[in-house]
Image: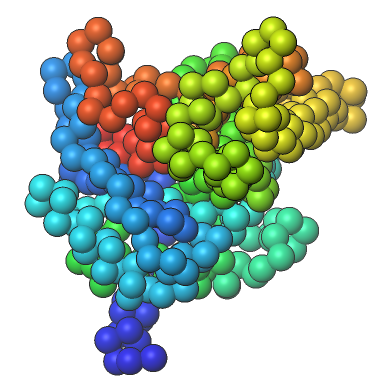
Length: 377
């Protein structure tokens, strides 16, 4: 390890001791910041600014990452990621602050109850006592924080959602941003960022199964009042459809993408085309996973026999969620309302402003949008 990297690592360790910044800073104290979403294949960013009674997108983009810089959400080459982040910074219009998300693959997410009105520092100590039975790492090797789900939970106290990450993973993200000259204001689990963008925030919102259908994998999260209470990732992605269409039917990548978005699973009367069957293979594998997650959480019961987490809806984000016919197909499997999420619901009214990112592509920016929303009133 060279001297520069060692110094940055020490600075990252110092920054990691202030992870109380994970959760929202009062907007009056928070500078204009970018939401920066890092995946294995790219870095997406988005900056919002208030405009009258709504908001406007003032900067956005998507920069590819070289192969193997980030694998499964884990940074393999901090300096290479920093180089890409420095390139992103040049497109932020002078903004040098950011909110970022940590990968769900490395997260440990759970719920617990604490006495109502417990001070934050005491809650954090109570969380540490839960590590042994819930998390396979020690408090000393972790960073963690919580969101309040319910202030009053039928006499059981205050329900909170806890997110835990390995400390070394979090520090590698801090180091990459620091090396790029970007001040990282907060880190949080990716599902929390998406929830901020797509959840209503209303108390009567049903428990939601959030499905982030990406290129190589799919993330699942159960949201209760906009707070993740569970996350997981499976190796099912939309690129499998494109690859099969290219290899089996000699389509170009562009033709395969157009087929996915325009026809996909839509089988007309008497239509049994091979292309539809190819798409159906990946859709069936995804549907099996959605159904498994949905029914497990929907049927959980407490000691009184009451349903604990009745799932009321399924929401899709991610670029592969544009597969035509997907939401109807999943809805038929789980027998619950299923839709593509509206990632702009807290940003603008389409009658007054049309964002510069088209509807299909915007599903890829759900995390960046949710992160950018942290600095808005």
